[in-house]
Image (cartoon, rainbow, N blue to C red; front, side):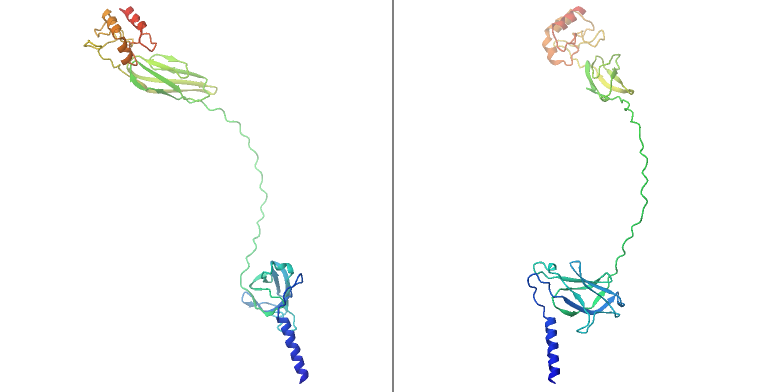
Length: 313
């Protein structure tokens, strides 16, 4: 009876030693922990030959191959177990360490904390369907296309364009023209519609008589020529002329040259017109612009204009 009691006491001491996790001291390896239990794959007991691997931080730390259907290791105290041996480097500042299990390479649903020296029952199961590894489709290398060379594009053809200012006003009317045909133009030809023309790029032209005028511009470059004709581009209204002080009729243009030299409005040029012009030099200068009385076209009213009027008498 004493013999049997001694054996029982030894077994209790062995179990106590196996179940109490000693502390990890210094640089020593921590004690391993051991596992046993059942194992299933997608709801069915795992067949013999199933490989179970335990990992810590992605590193293998123990494995066992099953010999029975649906079971791994042995539930007998002295039978084989799945031994998981951690390394000291697996512990960072005494943090908890997690054990992950793989069954035939597939991740098990269960994971446990590493407990040095522990012996425990742990059922393992795999329920997640592994995702198939995509097989890359082999494609033949692309055949390089031949490099196509294109001849340089020819310079563009010119396109005539312009504007004018003012487009409408009373005679005599000075109009400024601005070419907008582009920087490649080498020559210009303007037709102002009143019988006058010029080859200046941006001209100014005096319209003496009332009327609607069609303006045409032809431009040339190294690649060709282009023309633009604008009907009613310039509209010249009759001059606004009022009678001079002391006169009942307004001045007229007897010779139809765009200049009003009949100052008293009697339909002819005479000495009375010269006198009236002399007496009203300041008035003509200040109140009639653009001026049909600027006979010498110098932009002002002066004695030269008076002399020209006198010569017409």
